[in-house]
Amino acid sequence: MRLYGLILAGGQGRRMGGLDKAFVTLAGRPLVRHVAERLAPQVEELAISANGDPARFAQLGLPVLPDAHPQGPLSGVLAGLRWAAAAEADALVTAPVDTPFLPGDLAPRLWLAGDGGCAVAEAGGRTHPACGLWPVALAEDLDRWLASGEARVMGFAARHGAARAGFPDENAFLNLNAPEDLARAESFLRTGA
Image (cartoon, rainbow, N blue to C red; front, side):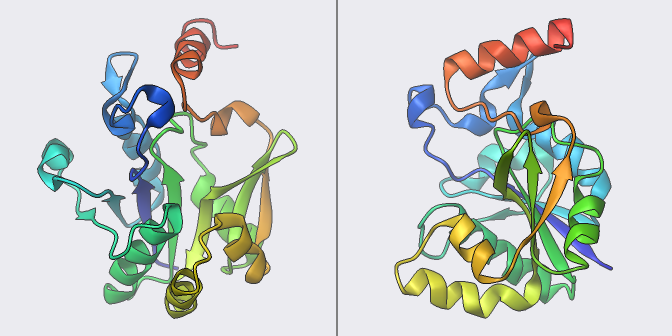
């Protein structure tokens, strides 16, 4: 089992006032660093899916994969699948850049839930499809899916019978989409609740 990882950092951060969410700070560190530190130990190699100037990520020393045709997170997943396939990895594990509390067992639990097939995370009664495992064999079908104008992550996951990996801590998938989410996360770090 060779798992590669990808941080989805291509969002426009509209609800964060247009800020590059990768560099919004939480506890004095950029979100991209929080996610990288949680995901890197779980995968063989890690990259970042982002458009724009890749030099802004140079301090992390990770490959930056741009979208061929930006259509949201699935465009990043496609770039990641092609990168992982070229290295003969079995699957790609993805996580958004705004989920700094990812579980330390995200990758293995996704793999086990789907028995190596497509799987997405679930916690607190909510599905988190951007936190998923995507076999590299899905790249061509994903390319066709995007070319047809489809771009919904859960739609593509459902198309491939994605298993759901249950996680007990719903805070593990807390998305920091807006300033109030960031304030909540800072409070969570201070108090642990």
